[in-house]
Every structure is written in C-alpha cells, then in structure tokens.
Amino acid sequence: MKQNHCFSGIMAKDYGGSPKPHQLDMKRKRLTWILAVSGLCVLFYVFGAWQGRSPTPSSQSDLSSKVGCDVRTGGQGNRDGPSSSAVNQDALDFESHHELSVNSSQDIEKFPPCDISYSEYTPCEDQQRSKKFDRERFKYRERHCPTKQELLRCLIPAPPNYKRPFKWPQSRDYAWYANIPHKELSIEKAVQNWIQVEGDRFRFPGGGTMFANGADVYIDDINALIPITDGAFELLLIQAVELLFSFPFGVLVFQVASWGAYLLKRDIVAMSFAPRDTHEAQVWFALERGVPAMIAILSSKRLPYPSRSFDMAHCSRCLIPWPDYGFLGLVPTGYSGPPIRWQKYWKGWDRSKEDLKQEQDSIEDVAKRLCWRKVIEKGDLAIWQKPINHVECLKNKEMYAQPEMCKSDSADVAWYKDMEACITPLPEVSNPNEVAGGALQKWPERAISVPPRISSGSIPGINAQKFQEDTETWKERIVYYKSLVSDLPQGRYRNVMDMNANLGGFAAAMIKFPVWVMNVVPANTQPDTLGAIYERGFIGVYHDWCEAFSTYPRTYDLIHAAGVFSMYQDRCDITYILLEMDRILRPEGTVIFRDMVEVLVKIKSITDGMRWTSKIIDHESGPFNPEKILLASKTYWTA
Image (cartoon, rainbow, N blue to C red; front, side, top):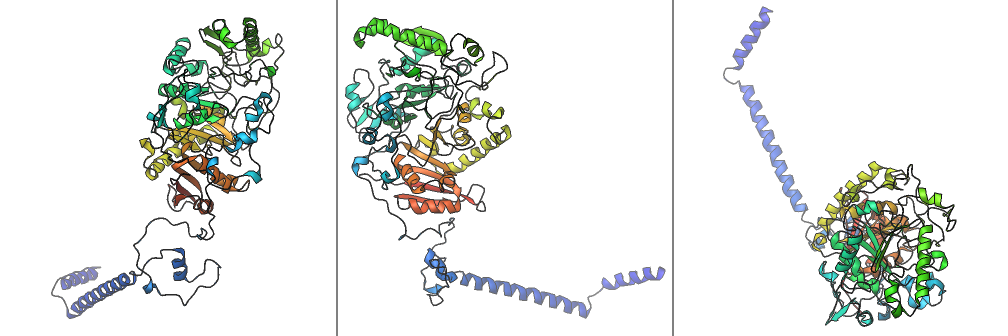
C-alpha cells in the first residue's frame, strides 16, 4: 500500500513538470483533426447551399417531372424531361399544399349562371310549382321541392347593381332597393308604417299592423303586462309555448320582423317566419335587415322545431282560422292572437258582433281544454300561459276528453311530420311544482350551462362532461377562425349558418361577435340535439341538406360546414348541396368547411367551377391532424 501511494505521488509530480515530446505530438494531432473536420463542414455547407439554389416545383407537373412520375397515369416518369436548371427560379412558398390530387383545370366543371328570372328562386317554395298542389289549408304554400330532373345545375345570379348590405345595427333600419327590388309592401302597408322607399334604399320605421306607433312602444306595452325583458320571465313562462325561444326568451313573429328587430336590443332573439305569398319578400326583408327569419307556414305539417323550443309565441293579425281543423293552429303553438277587442273594431272587419263573439268564445273554450291559463287581456293584447307540467291537466281530462293526449312517436319529430289534433304530453314530473323537462338558467348563463335534455340523459351518448369539452373545444376553434377571417369581429358578417350544429358550441363561442347563428341539425340523424340547442338559448331548425333550405337567395354572410359532406356524400350528389350553398350565400360571403382532407379536396374541385376562391388550411392543432379546413369565398358578380 505504501509503495502504491509513493508511486502515485511520483506520477503526480512527474505530470506537473515540463510537457514531454510525445504529449506535444498528441496536441498537434488533435488540433489538426479539429481543423480538418471544420474545413470539411464548411466545404459541405457551401456545396449544399449551391445545390439548394434549384427551384421548388411550382405546379403539379413540375413536381411530377422532378420526382419522375406521371400523376395522370400512375406510370413511370419521364426520365428525358428538362433538368432542374432549366426551370425558372420561384420564390419559396411555405403555405400548406393539399391540392395535389385535385382534378386538372380541364376536368373541373364550370357552372354557368342561371337566367336572371331565377334571381329570386326558392326551390322548395317555387310559386309556379306550388300551384299544382292542394289549396286546402294553404298546403300549396308548404315545402314542395323539385324532383331530381328539375334540379338546376347553374348559379343563381344577383340582380344588377347588387350592393353589400348595410352593417349591423344600421341594417335594422335600412336596406338597398337594388338588392330586393320590391315596392309592393311600401304601397300596400303604407298606413301601417312597415316599410318606406327613400331614393335608392328602403327604410324600416319600426311599424306594424298592430303597432303603427312603433315596435318599441308595442314592446313596452307588453312588458307592462308581463316582464318579457326580465330574465326571470323565461323561468316563469318557459313552457308558455311549444314553439319559441330566445336569449332571455324567444318568440315567433311575422310581417317584416320589425318587432323581432327591436327585441334584439333587449337581448331577445326572435325567429320570424312567413310563407312566400302575396306579401312579397317579407322574410327576405327580415334577413336583409340582419334579423333571423325563414320561409314557413302553419298548415298541415309541424314546423321544423322540436317540442318545448320557444318561451313565447307572438301573432299579430296573422289571419289564421283558429277554430278550424280541430284548432291545429293552437295545439302546436301554445299562444295565439285571436280576435281581441273585437267590440271596438268589428264594424271595420265586415263581420257581425255575434260571429266574432262566437269565435272568441270557441278559442277561450279550447284554451281551457289545452290547460292554458289566460294571464291578462288588455286593449289589443291577450296573453295565455301554458302550464309548467301536465299534472293538473291530466286530472282535468275527465272533464275535457278532447283533445286527447298524443300517443304517437317522439314529440321532437318534426321533419315533414303531419300535425295532429292532440296535446303533446310534457315530460313526467315528481311533483306539481316541478318544471317539466327541467328549469333553465337565465341568460347569459343559459348559453354555457348544461341543458336539461343532457343532464337528464335524454340524449344518448351525450353527458355533462362531453358537453363541457365541446364548449371548450369551440372556444379554441373560434379563436383560430378569427385569425383566418379577420373581419369576423368587425360587423362584416351578420347572418351566420351552422350546417351541422351538433350541441351548438359554434354558436355559443360566436356570441361575442355582432352575429346571430341559424343552427341546423340534419333531419332524421342521431343524436337529435336541436332541443338542447334551444335550451341553451339559440335558434335552429331541422333540415335535410339533400333538399334546398327555406330561405331566399343571398341571405347569409357566413356558412360553417363541419362534417356535413362526410355525412352526405353517400346520400346524394354533393354538387347540389354546394350549389344550394352558393344560392343562399351573399356575394363576397365566406364558407368555412371542416372535414377530412380527401373530402375537402373533392369539395374544392367542385367549388373551383363556381366562381369561388378557396384554399385548404391545417387544423388548429397542426399539420399532422387528418382533419383540415377549407376556407372559401364567393366572388362578386351579378346578372
């Protein structure tokens, strides 16, 4: 051990002295290797930079020639093609490119413009086709869509001099005459103050048949009777109707939607509807103003909404023969406007006092049979309330046997479903004070709260956790959309449609922008989520995208289509779905497609022939997600 220590000490002392010759040689060799490797690195870097000067392929043919393959035939490449040095040098392009499989320009179908006579075409409410159908109960004004042979394979043109609509909120009061060249209502309803023509534009003074002094005054009159602008109202009258909804609550209205337009500033969204009839363009004017509306009529079919959708329904002189056909107009609606204050107006109505009294007595009787309670009648207003449950109603059936409770399928089935003269039963409750189906939160908490249909387990496969995850997912996606569509928060877009709304997460995330969203749930698909969307305080409709939507041309600024074409590509020709989207999209409007990349490539190959511009963009999570986004814009052109 001592020898070892001694040896170690000698070695240490030896190492600390002057460097030996063999040590100097090792240092020189090490330095030589470092310099040699460094030199080689520099040489290879310079050589690589020189090689990198060859251009990137700028087209599919360039790419094919560089990699030596023929994309048209899948055969061997042309090895005798031009060298890369002969190709013009292009700037580097760092954008995502997913369109390499798109058909060549020779294969793209170019869709011609339709004749100018189709500028106002509404395929399923075509006035010429409707004449072939039964006029009883105005059935001919319901949806009657074209056959496959009648479908148009052309682009609906905008009228000459079409202009981009006014931004909200100015659009509430003004619209361009060139966009909707119809003066009929300004003449026919001049006394009622519906609409006025001022030079090259329409002005909407806010009047109506029953509120010539303006919608604001009329709303104040109603609010004096029931607190419609109080958030508690939706809890008090949430079951007031089977048809109607909104932010604090919703309503179903008619005419040019002035009442609905003025409710918006009180945080109430109304779904306005009217048929396409002699009052030309009522729904069109509403949508041009930026107010929710659609073409529809109370006739023989259920309206395309689920049960218990709306908090209130409103009818102002809507001329529905309420006592006829077993009171079908009342059974699905829940609140109505029968002849009120007829004692004052009967002389001008060309009807006898006895006739009018009998009609109102009949309505009062059927209201009792429906278990409604008359809240108040004052002046020109009468208000009924639907019960919060059917506990007492079922007991009263011993006294009023008719109408009976419906025994058919789900109350939410509404797509081409015949109306029945029976009462749609409310969900069962455990006590007389419980709200059937579950009570709702006040707005705006209602928008993000778990809907009762979900918390009760009524929608298979959807629970509270999935709902919350969906809500957070769409918050992130809207942030991404905002980076893609910079005008989104600036009022450039007003009327927005979600073609496959699911749980309404897209609409919920959009409430911070000055827009409203028409949430479409594809008809006859599972799970049926439209009822939950209404419980969140948003409007929507059932629809089958193999048919045309019930609206006028050029009525939506932004359309969102998530998973729509994966769903429908095996059901019908998606070309006609895209042509329908073109019909309802305004010139310079935007479409956001979200789908698998192969589906988007197919969509792009069609829209390239529709005068649209588009590009495929990576998913918000990055380029490795197979789901992509196709951002498209309709170019401006007119007849």
